[in-house]
Image (cartoon, rainbow, N blue to C red):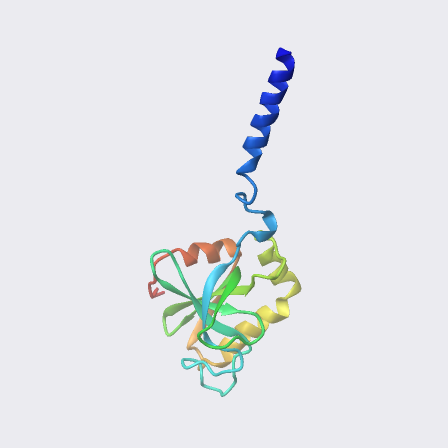
Amino acid sequence: MRASYSYIIILILLHCSGCGENGSRPSADKENKGVDMKITVSAGELLADYDKLAIPSFFNLGHIINYSGAKKQAIHLSKSIKSGQRTQAIPVALFQFRRKGVVQKYIITKPETDTLEDLDAYTHFMSYESELKTLIENWFRVQCDLGECDNFSWSNAYKAYLDMNEPNEKTKG
């Protein structure tokens, strides 16, 4: 008789311990891995600071607001998104160059719906989308006067995340 009471108590405890957990754990497919981004210039529009030639951008331009409230410039590679809209994005690379002695940095992002793993995003972008990388770089080169822009470089997603969390500063170099 005592054994049946212990089984009943164990069953009740197991049942009660499982009651509160339903829905409290985030599932892997519902994790939010992206960052919030606000679009400032839609793909197909001219950028104000880069209008030497009337070539519209083929990317969306926006900013990501970090924890300290600093706005970080970002290029979002997706279909055209209306200016002023917010979207979730995954940083895949950091693109930077020097213009008139000031370092310009752009975090390259893709839509959150892309199924890229964080660690493989940069490798995938640089290997399989190298034409896109070249197009971005050449778009900025053609918008600069001769000798105005130099030191074009690319860094991985880790560097993009590090840059996102730094306060804004115009770097002379």
